[in-house]
Image (spheres, rainbow, N blue to C red):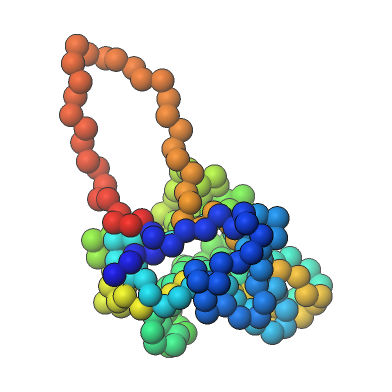
Length: 216
């Protein structure tokens, strides 16, 4: 049962991988080293195969939402892990036209406990949804190095299913067509390593402070 951490893509070869993104629709593509999803008054999406699990794993990516102008009251980029039941999913919806980003855990396309933040292209440049020991965490990052937890929730049972898919979808209610983009899918930048500082005669054992993601 592959976890989402096994699904990676840097979108640098100029061709959207038809195996990794086998359920895509609306003509997404690769351009300039990013995945590009058309944002029109219709719907387009870059969607993986339904063959992954979120348990002890993650999805992480750098996002470039659609433009907010052109008279649109909504120009949204959905970043979701989908279960096998329509409307039962989890993730982020970024809508620059409403200056908002929503953090969702939905059933029937609804989440009464959704968390909403004022969208910042800087603070929310990177998004990550991860599952760890029965807890889901929605996180954002400026640089893909340091992450801020924005929401936590108990993991629903479906995160352990082996038929989940990942989707980036774009849609606007008005205005000229443009696109949403994303990059570095599950290729999170390594942390910076500073010069070591020896403070004692010997080495101290490392203390594990957080649980480790499997396939994440």
